[in-house]
Length: 577
Image (cartoon, rainbow, N blue to C red; front, top):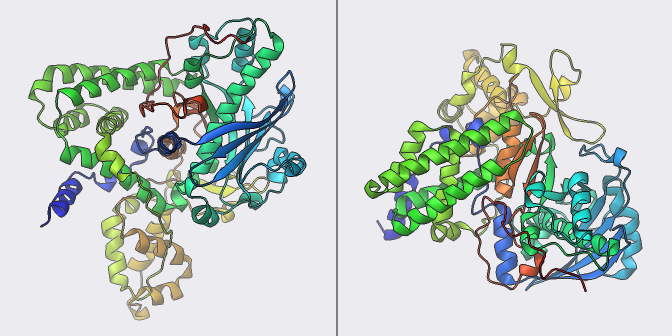
């Protein structure tokens, strides 16, 4: 066996079992990590030194108007168009049914053409009701955090920097309520982006970059309004404070079905994350330097968790328990590090003594400590999402696949009321996913296929109950007789070749927590600081601690995981003359 094959075999020994990784509660305990999309995007922007400049900044003294940013990469150019309008506070809502927003934006390919501005003025602020062209990659909108925005303007215009502790209560000036891409409303579809725009071939990278630019505009707008309010007295936001500002996000059920409808893609994301962890466990050993870095990151994570502000009691308890667990693990590590000969010892200790939240925090930190092992996995491997039926497969073989790989789905009793209590559907008004109660709500006949466990169980029950006289031997004959099972069989046959991808939970259960699905997907985006508003939607923060545009071209330290409050609140050197 070659050295490369031997190393690969060693890594695979450390891969965790699907029934451990794909547990819904564990997925809902994932944290952003080294290969999360925002981290990858910022490495690209900083290493390639993208040039981002204002081509137009036509804002009045209250910050209303339009701005155009031009973006030049080594291979292409784009422009980012912003419309900032007055919004009656009574109309400000995070719900998808909103009709107006404080901010509407689009990311477009090519240099800015002033002749197109009037058309953009008419369409971008309309969002879903407008019409975009294939020159646009992303369409988005955002609302102010009223209390933070007004507070920051008042502080800057009076010559003072805002209090970091006050900023920490929210963490952003704006939060996005939708970020659309991949061909919606006439924009460039995913196939065109992959083929023509090499800068954004990573999943959701154009969307993430748009969020980064909204964050940048929010900072530029705040400086502008303060300077207009008090030209002689005002100061600009301190750069350290600017970096601590993120961009907020409100995410609801619309994101949840994605994890179910794209299992091959999800398998790729999770397999990469698990492979990164396995690579560290199999090819690195703790030493004084890595143990020191590990301890520093653990202390930072503890501080980060303690600083998260949320009124959600359950989330507060999760954060508090996780912080206490890390403190306890850190104490153990300091006592046992002289006896620590491999990382697996620590992983085993944490697994034996702490819950999944603490376990996934430790995994995230461990991945961070060994960038050389992890960044080797960074290159995007394009996933062809093709789900094919294999009609010639023997029915007996299909039955064995279900028994071996979908045993988790056969454990539920869907004849019980609670196991089949809810259904997922799309609202007619906005085509957004919703949850219905089978006992009270109409429309169960229009449910979308989210209950994978039930579909597998029903298919399996049909196979096992086949009368012998039907003489059905293969899948083709079976789906001809029972066409209602065609879609789930195609999925089973496709996913049988993968390790991860299927979330091993009954998503139709009365007590299911969709927020676990949201947090899982958001962790791969790079989102942190979760603030649940119900079991169905959550506010969170993106790009907190990340570089700002003026940092491009400087030495980049890719270490903004677990952002904590900066200590420097001085306005010295930021005065406007």
